[in-house]
Length: 569
Image (cartoon, rainbow, N blue to C red; front, side, top):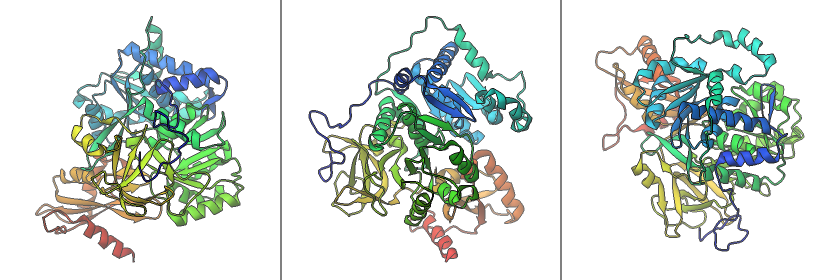
């Protein structure tokens, strides 16, 4: 426990925890709610509303279907899905049988599909039909994959929307040949009938349930091992601080399920507390605004760039926002100016709440610090959630610094990950036991704390680009660029963008004899599209004869950042 500040303290007996946490799996927690509130709507998708009692049946069907394929406790299965029923059903079904869900972006490049599936040793994959081509292209290289379950958005639609879907969006999706070695989602679910006498394993709170991804200090992708308790503790912490939460409250879920914010808060926190989740598979600022007006949600969450775009959307101008009990911003720093604009907008549209900024890491699922309902401080990211302990330490040590002195943000508590998948070195560098006996995440972020325990984020120690709430790691992009036969060396930086906060720009030294032309630029761009997800693609390439270097010969990316900043002045 931090000697400087003990947030949210109620009482301390033999335990450090102030909350009593659910014992069991995160699927068990949702089942408990389903049995208690069977007729409450669990989720809504494109007009289709499903009650908790029916959601539980869907989870059991998928769990038996997974067992029919031979998926066992401890096996990994990759889910590459947008926010749709099939994705969350299989997420909980895997947990029901003790298997581990490996959550990835459905828009990943084919090279990323290959990496994630091999790295996790996934035995099966659930993906959308429109992205199967990427999987097919790399399938000969997938060492552990036995089954590919292919779903369609149509599988989750209400009956009255299936024909319109086939006639519009469905027509644009390339048909998959019947000879392909895949299992259609409907056929997969039918497999549940083949299971007899199957007994679900009893799971412990500390068992790993999910793998989410984040880049590390080296810029390499790391699989974050998150336990049942990690998800369940977050769920209970959030509801503890949102005092006017009620059964049946509606959350508009646009944050994706491969993201800690989307999966941990929008999905699990709501479904394990009797809330209703409106699943949104894809959206724009305009469609998001229309959904708010249509569904009258009690809670919404998004990245700052989404809110900024929403303010400029015509369809929001006449919106009645009196339904809102909470609006949360995460994934990137919310500027003081944008927060003021948002709060003024909310007030002028009959809302009684202000936007609450959060801070966290995927290493503790998502938010572990939140602006409290009772008091805000300008520029602060709030105070730790119940039982989450924040320290500001001298970087790389457990030496706690005084109020207002900047240092590394270190975090302990029940949502802290178990570690990184097959990466003991990074685990030891990130998780460190302090002299108080607690294990802390060393975040790599710089911040400070005031005398009331409010946390202020300053900057990232790690070199990272944040675009539309997505973390992009320059070294990963550089590695891909440098593999191109035309390229000698590259450097990638983040450039300020009024909507995305940052966008990616690449500086490239070409090999001798290669012409610095538009044709060359387009050739490299075409190559990059095969290996880099759309959200991480460079918006521009600038050719350089030389890249600036530090005294020890490293590429001085900060000089390039300063040059770009100077252009804006």
